[in-house]
Length: 138
Image (cartoon, rainbow, N blue to C red):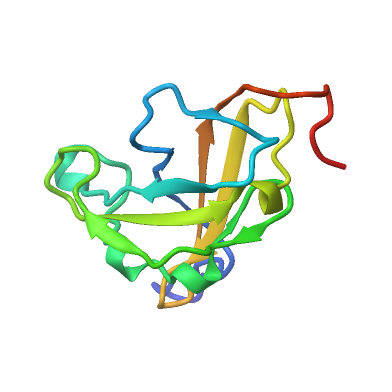
C-alpha cells in the first residue's frame, strides 16, 4: 500500500460457477467413452446474490483447459441462459478422452481467462459410470 493506493495481486483467479453437462443434473460422465463433454460457464451477477459479476461472453474459449490433463475447448461456444437466472451463460465442450478424467473422480476443474487476461477457475462435482477398469486412463 502506497498512500491511499492499493496494489492488487495480478494472478488471483476469479472463482466462477461451472456446470458439467448442464443437461444432466446428475453430472454423470463416462471416462471410457469418446465423446464431447459439454460444460456451462454460468454468468454471475452480484445483484442476484452471486459472489462476483461475470459476463460469460467475456470468457476466452481458446484459453479454457479442463480436467486433470488440461484438455482444450474443442467446441464452438454457444451463449444462452442455461440455468434460468436471466444471465447469459457460455456453453463449451471438451474431449472426454483428452480430459484425463478417470473412473472414481468426483470433481473436475476448468481454468482459463477472460479476454481481459483475468484468470478464472471453476469446479463442479461429477459421478463416473460405465468404467471397464478401475483406472480408465494412464
